[in-house]
Amino acid sequence: MKTQQFVVIGLGRFGSSLAMELMDLGYEVLGVDINEEVVNDMSEHLTHAVVADATDEEVLKSLGIRNFDCGIVAIGDDIQMSILAAILLKELGVQTVVAKAISMLHGKALSKLGVDRVIFPERDMGIRVAHQLVTPNLLDYIELSKDYSIVEMTVPQCLNGKTLSEVNTRARYGCSIVALHRTEGVIVAPTAMDQLHAGDIMVIIGSNSNIDRFESEAVNVKS
Ligand code: ATP
Image (tube, rainbow, N blue to C red):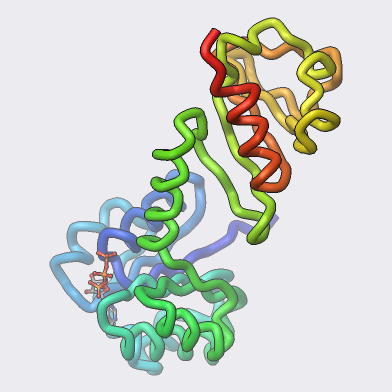
């Protein structure tokens, strides 16, 4: 399979962390930043890092930007720069363009210009932390739609040793346990006879209200 190649425009806190994680995951990453100091700091961590103005079409062409599978515009503060860079990546033929937005209006503009995915890191992290603060057992969650999510929760002591059929989340709470992480590995699509062990992480899918009900009635119970 062809290695996916990423270009990250803007190596601030968000861009550099994203670029380094992609490297850790085994992908090739070109980092582009207008600031030489930033590029020097990152050069040893990325496949390539270059000093360039991402709003200069000729410079982007000379970097062979159109050959990248995915381009991420991680410039936030200067909305004009962010929008120009995103337009150029699209126009030069980068297959998937992702851009960070710092406000709803910024995000709307990026979407209208055909950016494939707009992300709001500060807003999303704020929402995530709020959910974790009010639901102590919640480790992580992915919003599938406004009403449906996939969440990760630790199996509490009160469910230790129970089989999935005993807990019967589907009939009782309308949500399903779709995976269990334990030290020995991950059980994907566990069967009715699989047992929960306190400390396992269960991955649950369902409507937010049903997951909340399961959490408050079955998980957050003092044994
Ligand atoms: P973060 O929160 O991720 O630190 P930020 O939202 O504060 O970033 P900026 O500081 O505006 O965003 O930009 C991030 C990086 O993008 C900076 O390192 C900056 O030098 C770089 N940058 C800004 N404009 C351009 C441009 N036209 N071309 C390339 N890089 C740019």
